[in-house]
Length: 438
View 1 (tube, rainbow, N blue to C red):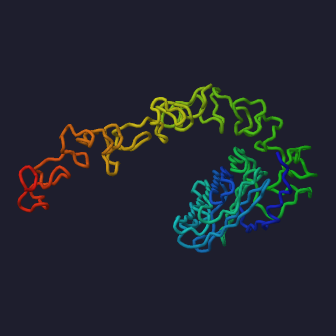
View 2: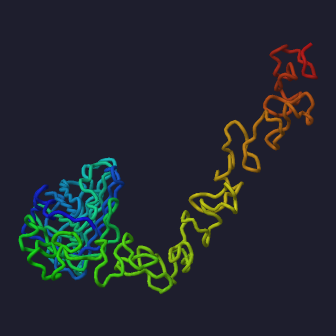
């Protein structure tokens, strides 16, 4: 694991987070950031915090006064972003008339009128004391000014309601949590074990003070992990599951350092073992347990062991007839989004079909789901009755559209007819019964 410079960089470079007096912490649940490196518009972030029997209250009126969100990601490449959520109709909800009553605020932005990276926000408190904070943001329309810290050591958010309270959520650092992915593409932290604290001031690694929530120890203050502060190259941090270093009590640490594990590393830095009836993500979705839709969990030894069947995983499983990499059941006819063989006649053009129904343009769709082609020398029934090279059905009367000409239908079939009944432009009023002019 590469060394990380002083974790104070994020705040000294971008300004310390200012937290109003009424700062409250909510236990985090999930921090999920991902991006395609080099493409800022692909950045996506979802944050969820939820706490039962919380003493935290909802105060303030963001619909009238607005609010501010600040997100911090710390680690190898720290960054921070502050987003002002304007007052107005994007907000709906209310603060409770008395502190312990039910209250909520929701903020939503339409894709056609985005003014911030925030797609939606929910802050709610039930009458029983359960409080929830969720935020969903992306950089598709408005830049989202944070990136994957690679590796990440801490992530957090503060929601400050102007004229009301502030709410802090922490992941990593003193809050703990399980790092399920931690690289240049994604930072995912789940289930922190503590609420942590609201950031205030500028942490300085090496000053002997454990600056929560960013630091878990300091060079001369290593009570949390005696002799191990910064041991894995992460300044002012105790070793933790997710730092890619196998520490005492761990069998592995992320998929990049499996140690003696042969199947994969679990979220808890233990070896995943398919068949032990314990589902150990992220390498297992099931283990002797049912999957969604009644599908069967792949057994030990299968290429996708302890995973639920999914089209595109390269394994022909329950409910599938083929896979994009194995179309032996219907060569060239495997439908990529269903892993079923294409069926000619169902009205849907699928893999290996030129048509299915009436989608042939100038031609006609045949019973084998190919388009008829007039002029190819083959009479393709029922779309065609004859061909220039095969007019046995109507000798000398095959039209250019591969349909047999019929004298007497009031349509002049060229070149074999000069006129036909009322279609007598070549000899008005004198078309003969054999469709010729006198």
